[in-house]
Image (cartoon, rainbow, N blue to C red):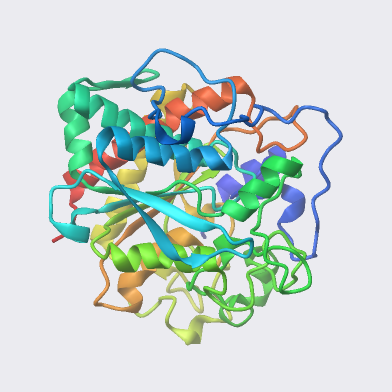
Length: 433
């Protein structure tokens, strides 16, 4: 009998699970109503603290300070320019424009190979607009790495300390970042304080697609999952918080993320940075993992009627589990545990490493898409895909995804240490050919 202990615990306590509030999980066209509390957590910064790129960002791992405001969407761009001007990194723009005409911009840092093949780790942020601190954590973390590398010093996040040599090892992995992969949604959420999750595409008659249900992994959930679980896997209702769009990769934002994988085709490790449940999730999210039946996998349509049922046993009758090779499964879990230990030490609160389906089965998620690429097409690179759910929610805010100032700073330290453990684990477990 498979277990859903993690979800039972979350449901009991009324917490968010997998970036969703309990009332948002069912496919009922629910539109969130912002609670009446006046607090919106840490305020969004005004102006430009990086002065159009003349000042480089610097995070909490390389200095003893704290931040009192969130980055606004424009500061992510000026912060990247600051890193270009100070450290000589290279930025890129994906060849897709959002509904509101915004570009999706990233950067590449470190690496020990040549050309695009030098970059083996991809950090993605703010795919869900309301998860405040995601893009900040990525920008400030790589800023810390670059500062420490240039000055030959280490980094400290909470109780986790890293030497200058470990900083150089981490950078040697080669890092691609996209701090804000949902610029339209993030700008709207920051201006409206409306707890906005999706992008801003109105094409289906209601605004927004859940970008983390829009990837080409079991996207057609009405066909590919058991009918009994479909209401929590995704939604075909445009007003729903989990509306999956009109087709896999229907959205420019998800196309841009796919473009990053295709362009930097040697990426071996991927993290999508979300909030909030205090977890690090490893694949699969479609069903519980199993290592004994290779034919029992997401490509096998004979299991469509039972996929996603977490109470069955793989190999017993029609029981299904998602296949992952034993060696990959071991690495996926061990790296997740290391990241969880880093998050715990950095932020001072306990994080858990769990399989993504322990929350509830999902389709079209970024981490599963990343991991599925080499199964769907053997010419693609193996990617170990993860979701970090940083933080533990703000019960006093109008939206629990809006952290307090204290939470914002502790979350940043947690994520910094978690990212360091990811990079060191990536080098240890392998960056690929």
